[in-house]
Amino acid sequence: MTSADYLVVGGGIAGSVLAWTLDQAGCRVVLANASGLPMASGVAAGIVNPLTGRKLVRTWRADDLFPFLHQFYQNLETKLGASFFHPMPIYRPYRSLAEKTDYETFTAQPEVAPYVLQQADEESLSPYIENSFGGLTVGQGGWVSIPEAIKSIGLHFLEKEQFVVSEIKYNELTVSDKSVCWQDVTFKKVLFCDGPHARENPFFSWLPYNVVKGQILTARVAHYPIRQLVNQGAFILPINDTTIRIGATYSWHDLDWQTSADGRAFLETKVRGLLKIPYEVIGQSAGIRPATKDRRPFIGLHPHYPAVGIFGGFGSKGVSLTPYLARQFARFLIHREDLDPEVNIQRCLSLL
Ligand SMILES: Cc1cc2nc3c(=O)[nH]c(=O)nc-3n(C[C@H](O)[C@H](O)[C@H](O)COP(=O)(O)OP(=O)(O)OC[C@H]3O[C@@H](n4cnc5c(N)ncnc54)[C@H](O)[C@@H]3O)c2cc1C
Image 1 (spheres, helix red, strand yellow):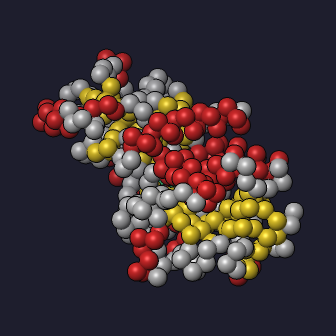
Image 2 (cartoon, helix red, strand yellow):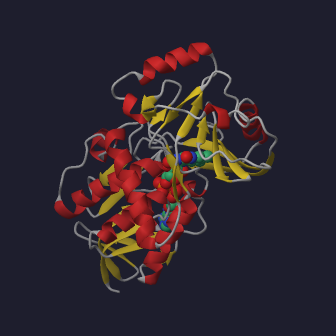
Image 3 (cartoon, helix red, strand yellow):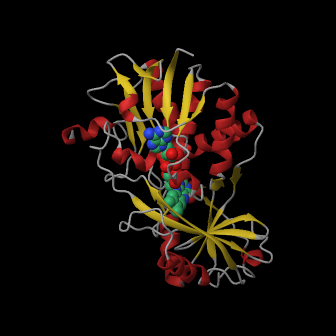
């Protein structure tokens, strides 16, 4: 190969979804991922949840993102002959009667109401989950097994001989206004999807990141037949009948990829208030979320190097944001359609 359209750097959820979207639009894409660098996507629980936080706030652009992501991951599974998307409701038990009243007020709002399902099956939940005050159920949720999704996309590119397991060193790129050359292959553009590593990327280190460390536990249980996510201060994600994941912590300090006793203690305290059955922790992992100061992704082309782009800054919502925004970025790249100003890196120009 001597030329291709795009070199996508980073094979986490962002790079994989973008590379797939461009490939399906007919572009020739090389996907490169460094095996030696840590990856947030390898740690993430993969949850998609349209109503988040204590006040059940509707996720930014949820009305566009959620219908699109359900279709996207289902279609991806069909095309790749794989199974990694698990749509399921999200149960939010009330912690008190006062909270029940508050939640009834929040869920009556017209922008929130469409995401709330009418009935929660309290009886089948109560042997396993603390729900003395009842709870509500959020629709359009679920989770993606990200390692399986990105592996399937990676295989697709491997079969086309368009996958490279290599760290792309910045000084190995020859950048001009119209192209980028790497190892004798000329690309129209290089698109960085390097997640939290973008902070060390000389092209994009000026962008205002505000990364957040997170930790998560994997636990074994004797029998857990609940096929819903449970979320109340922490989440319980059912992997199968005997394995659950418990998460997650948020820390703006000690920004490394190491697990900690404090992180485990915090999550265990939370889960003890939620889960009624015994569990045994069998794993713990830590990662860095590529969050941004204004909590919006970083998408677009470098103001001085139009052949260099970025698709990143997805914070704690990479799974829900990337499908819709990859389509938008692809349309921008291929058809010169506008990017949403809220995600376009042009908004940060004064920092360059
Ligand atoms: C504990 C925890 C729980 C989370 N839970 C959820 C959740 O439930 N739902 C959700 O949506 N999100 C969740 N997240 C956030 C999620 O992890 C991120 O939004 C998402 O993974 C970011 O994906 P990314 O592809 O941008 O970055 P990454 O997954 O970090 O991928 C970046 C990739 O780029 C590669 N790379 C970097 N530089 C180079 C280079 N020069 N050359 C080649 N390759 C390079 C790295 O090796 C890496 O593989 C969670 C995060 C944590 C830490």
